[in-house]
Image (cartoon, rainbow, N blue to C red; front, side, top):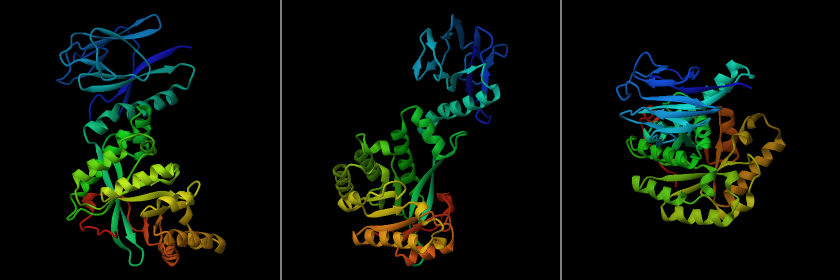
Length: 362
């Protein structure tokens, strides 16, 4: 089975991702137009680096460039063997190295390689260049549809990493989900300062943060950025498995004058025991539980209403997520949901879309 090496990246900031086969060896890179790959940037040397093969192995040589050649962040001294999925950087231009098998559909393979490589190439920029963009979605009080808080969501200015799903997919390949999650929270707090008054914000966590050290330390950093701003920390319901850990987290957040919310309640196993033991300030019911609730059977409505009452009796504020029409909101209000969130009340938007501050319910 024959394989072809390729570099995937952008030749300029305004250009879409390209896959460049390394057909001819040596494959030379630099600013000169007669080279295999011409990168016409001032940071590049005229003859910057080259790829060479030795048997079935591929090697990268730096040709005494001014600004260096890097493999996975380490500067190449002379020559180094490179492998599939390595991050190659010529001066300040990153590329992903990959292999394409000739026995697979070439177009599909190239598209898959490009999509995956794009995310990996761009991920470093995402964090180091603050390319994460905070979006805010209103959380309203159901009795009068008044905005009382905003959930901080994230987008990106980088091609290929526009959505949270693509950002975290790239982060997972680099074992950097926690780093990305923290960067999203920090940008959310920074952006919320542009409101006329910093609003109450709900910030998200990644499940890995519950099993690694440092979550409370990261919240302390947030508190230093916003000394008195109301902040609620969301934990996905599926990650709530250790009651003692949750109690410790709740206590630590209390010390920081932050609130705790369980998110996506009911998406999987409804953890009622953990809910009763930890008693977060908020419980966000998964959108699937309230979707089309105005059309649901009376039995389904009764079950949901019973859960809402149970939550309220524990002193936890129930939040209905995913409200997309007036009728859903009306039924949820009749069931005694206190807060709601969804496209009906506003889609996620950058801070520039908002002109008035929110007030906190707690």
